[in-house]
Image (cartoon, rainbow, N blue to C red):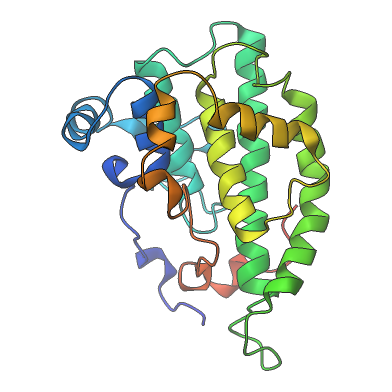
Amino acid sequence: MTLLNPEKVETGPLNPIKSKVVKMMLTSRMQIGEEHQKIACDRKLSNYMNHCPDWLKAKDDTSKNWMDLDNKMTETIAVVRAIGAEWFLIPDDPEQFKKCEEIEKILFSIMNTMVYLINKICFAPNSTECNNFDVEYARTRFTAKFGPKAKALEELVTGPFIMGDTLPVHADYLLYACLYDITVFCPTALENHPKLSTFMEKFWSYPSPIRRWFKSNESKTGEYIRPPTPHIMELLPEDQIQGDIH
């Protein structure tokens, strides 16, 4: 489907209290229980888009970066940074902060690639040849593109976390959330990337209040950032989704 007035499409701003990555991060900072988390979101995160990094800011007066194919990663990165700034999860060292930003950029690209492959290549609502979603073809195409990106991530992750065997920083939470969603779509995605697999296991078993989150039912259902089959074709005009995404 091609939108006649794509500029009028509005998915609404991210609601922090409904975001799994937000709940995970707040639990890790001892903001436990929905009532306390709602207070934290209302008081501390209402202006989370103020923390949107320069490289992600839209070039006009909207809050959306047009390259964000389903309008989720821009706001997710901004809210993760907002939580990091409020609860002391942003690295003080400039080099470590730069590393985190590079990881954000790679994750932005990976998640957009997943969305693009699912909707344009493997589901293709505009195609006269493909009426059904071919999940195995989607996974095969994604795995090929994910490999180089995963390698780039592994080069940046000191191990087991981004800064080493120390406290996770804001980008560690973002990395976990993205990798979790990726493995929901493609369960074998991390098979050839042991460093990322170790990161996921270490993060899940990290001895901190975050264990309370991983024991909750909320952590065991649904995706952190986006569902495995997001329908971006309802969000973008045809002329903005030609060609592949790298």
